[in-house]
Length: 314
Image (cartoon, rainbow, N blue to C red):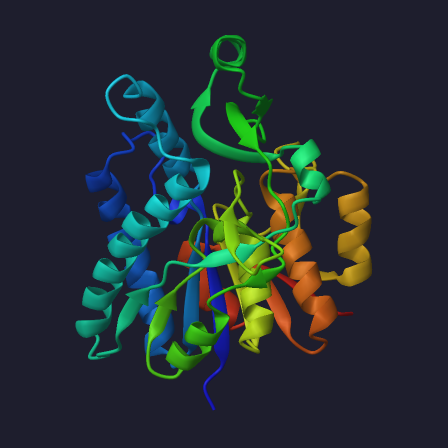
C-alpha cells in the first residue's frame, strides 16, 4: 500500500531570493519545485500539497493599498483567497507537466480552502506571522510610523510586517479532500487556509489573519490519516544555536527533546518554531509515524531516512 504524505512547501519553493517577486519569476521557481515533487510521486507516494503565502499575500495587500485611490482595497481574507488561487494555479500547471513527462497522468487540482479559527485565540493579541517583503530597520520604522504596521526582525534576514497567526481548528472542505485523495493530487490549505470564524447561525466569516501553513499541514495530515508529514524549508536540517559558531544540526528529535529546545528558545517564532511545533503535534497524536523537516532538494533522501530532522514520539 502506498505511503500517504502531506507536503508543506516553504517560501523558497515559490520564490527565489534576490530576484524580483514577479509572477514570471515565481513560476520559474515553481517549475523547479514541481520536478522534485513529481519525483516523489514517481516513487509511489500518495500526497497532498500545502503551500505558504507570506510574501505573496503581503504583496497583494501592498498593491491594494497603493491603488486605493482608484480601486477599493480587498479585505485581508479575500487577499488570502487570491493568493491561494494564483499560487495554486502555478503549482498545478507546473506539476501536471512534470508528472506527464514521467508517464504519470495524475490529475492535479487546487482547492480553495477555508480553515476555521477561534476569535478568542491569544494569537490576535500577539502577532507573529511575517508577511510581505523584507526591510531594513530604518524602513521598518518608517512603515510602522506611516501605516501603523507591527514590524519585527525575522530570523536575522531583515524586518517584516507581522500579523496574527491563530491556530487552525477545522478544515471546512476536508470531505472534498478525502473524496479526491485516491485519484488526484490536491493542493489545499494554501497559505494555511483562508481564516474563517463560525457564527452562531452556522455561517462563516472571514478573519484578518494568516494561519501558519505548517500548522495547517499538520491538521490536514491527521485528517487524511497520513503516514508522514514532510515540511520543506530552506535548510537540510533544523538546528540549535542556528548561525552561531557552535551550531548543531539535529538528525532526530523525540518529543521531550523538541519541547526542551523550544522552551530554551532555539527556534525563531516566525520561522523554524512553527515547523518544530507542527512536527511535535503530529508525532504526539500519531505514535509510530514521523514528521520530517528538510530542504526541497533533499526531500527524497529524507523520506528514505538518509537526511533531514525526523521528529517522532520517542
